Length: 119
Length: 115
Image 1 (cartoon, each protein chain N blue to C red):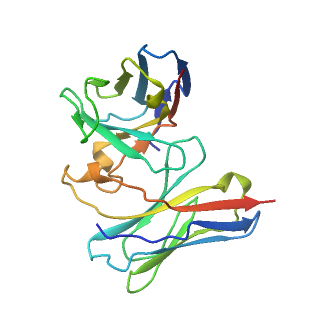
Image 2: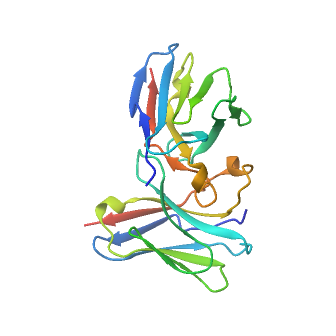
């Protein structure tokens, strides 16, 4: 089955620094990737949708200058949290959608998530 | 999309079958029932989906009532590793690219499998 690798699985950074999270589709080409954020005991919240080769579409309330998304290839998307602050501490999850399975798996295959802690 | 209702939590003894219910009384004819789960500190994992017929795969079985207003996910022999939040989602399966950004898992059912 489809495998999505997300790295790192956890990261601690100082306030004001930037952190990059990678999401890779290992055995398929993902034309669309999604980035989510999840706070403790809450459901996933979609942050943005990225299509390979074009700008990401951000959900309302998500700062695009703070959460930079790059989807430069069909197998890699990155999320960079710029000038991170403690309130950005959260669990970030990506998903990658195989276009051949977009009907039956519309949300794609999820990565294992990245726990970001900003101190 | 049809709204779903799930119990907030359930307990199950290891080795026994776990039956997780989901109500989706406003489901329309072209909407599928999807089940995902999320183990603590991991990304969601697809389990199974169905439209009308009962479905079975290596992970679970999905039983959909004849009127399609409810369904049950069955884990035949629950293990400790099945402890997770289970989400039931109803969604149209479509070739259209729009609309998927509104995915919400809701609160799901927290299944606790005990020794």
